[in-house]
Length: 120
Image 1 (cartoon, rainbow, N blue to C red):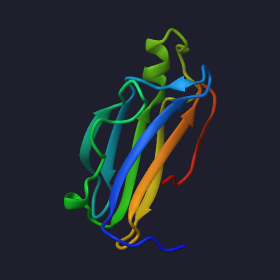
Image 2 (cartoon, rainbow, N blue to C red; image 1 turned 90 degrees about the vertical axis):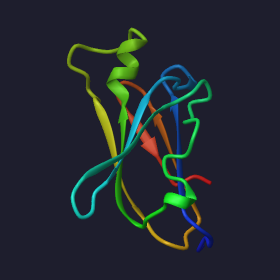
Image 3 (cartoon, rainbow, N blue to C red; image 1 turned 135 degrees about the vertical axis):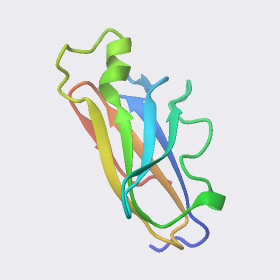
């Protein structure tokens, strides 16, 4: 189903190992075209969401992006990290198109696994 309207991008993170929002995780947004450029770095709040969008409507530029989630750092701070973590930085490569409306990219994670989807 096509979603119309200006684009924007948000995320939230759930700690599935404990069944709680992942408060305090660092999340970076990188624009990949024509060369990688860091757009913004945010930390998740008590609800596992960032206080502001990763990319607001006014700043939306279609293209290839990466969301980089500091999973190992987050779990290490909770006393659950290994010296050599199975997951370190989880990188999600996403393509954001014009006239597709709001993009929401949740991350569900533990020290050993993750899942994602396009949310609403």
